[in-house]
Image 1 (cartoon, rainbow, N blue to C red):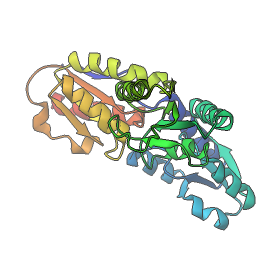
Image 2: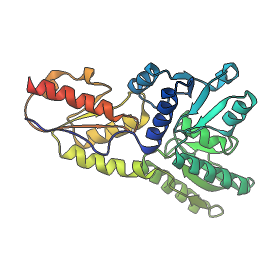
Image 3: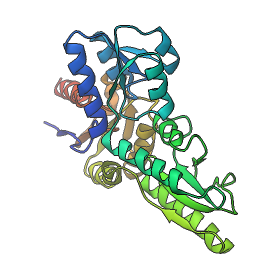
Length: 291
């Protein structure tokens, strides 16, 4: 029997798992529960929560909610969301990841204590991502968002830099951003760089763990929602170390001829991939190779 192994480092990160648990607990009590935005970037998991009664809304829907609870996902929200909820008498259940909450407070403190005439906050993150929106909100939208290490045009070259990162970014890319900004401040001499790598430790460990897992198997099935930027990044990294890597969002996408031959099979996924989905893929593969 060929070995079919699930990557022990794959699956929900702590923050997402906590948010899903909170949603399920409230739904199990029969409460009317609304999720502000997608709870996780995984269509299959969203579908599962919908069958349990979760209703997804946007901030613009606050004024129309009555007799219900609104759960904030792990990514967090800007201060404006809490303000609007209070104005519309909406009950908030804050499931923001504790690591994200801590980062929000760090950025808020830095913003309140900096001198805007000579300093600026720069955040390395994904444009439009829920967490980044929440982080930018701590600076009243004045922080400079850098989405690529080489795209530094919006950074004010006459001001010193206080650098943070969205918690789920690629650590290697953050290092590139930091190096480029440090070089910029050294050239100018009049400015300085204060940098803190605020990427979650689970993300920092994810790539080394995934590399080891990819190298020890002949075939890898990487499971994640196709809209997950974390999934896309980790899939590409996995394929760099194992060319026989397939990106799927469910077992139904597996083509049987991918399983022909010998060798071990590994199953991994993004931080937005639930354990049940990894196990579903494993069960399907075992049935195919056994038949």
